[in-house]
Image (cartoon, rainbow, N blue to C red; front, side, top):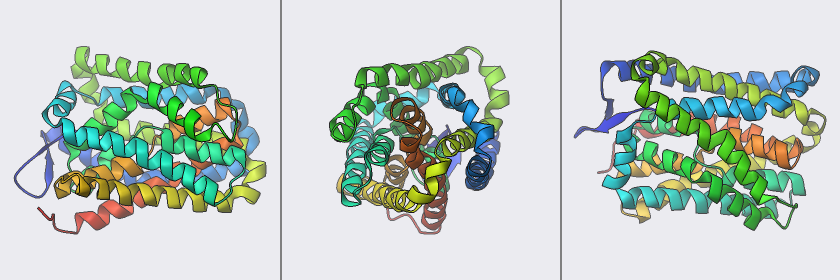
Length: 328
């Protein structure tokens, strides 16, 4: 994750020149990422037979992404939780209340078929997206808060995500929450911890690879999208329109209500901007993995569309916010 400190100025500046280079590369990666995801989705739709056999690799691909996330974490990231427990707690509660609730509400209002409804709710129950802190950086938001919320939401996901999914989506399909817990521990928690330990004990080696991590994550997530789309290619034509509408509404609720939650919590404008992305951007790779494993390829379709859309909308909102002066 992008590491930064808050300065008295309106901008958030990286800690050192190496991280400045990482920030520049991250901006490029986030700009190109939506294009990579679109290309991957098109390839998955046009040549599904190429990607379908790779379905068994999706959990391992997600593990790579989460290991990369762990590599970017440092002890100061967790120290920021202790320094501002109220802001972090507000971000966690907002994330795990707004997005799951919005997913359920949209699924009911649009009368989505059970598999799509569960898929959308599952996206809402996932932890924060891996690119959310980069968007916060580009929007001149509170990057330290963004990193703290993303880290904590990921670490508690093995307990929170299955419980919320069972509570909100259990009426649509049968859900094995216990198996889901084990899957999240294996594909999220353990790789993140492994990455964190590697950062602590192999710091010099890790420092050399930090600049390429945004690209590595972007490529792997794009491959997951191609595999997910290939698995449901035959049903995309019929379901694509309603899924896209649901995802746009879901993401819009998250971005808007995330900012509003920060405002109601009396956080400053930098923190509000960070919460907008921490609430509105989801770990769609995890949602796609769980959906594919537990509910079928069609249930993973909302995750694939969300992976594309939230990066496009996030980049647009970040650019818009960056041009607006901070209110505090």
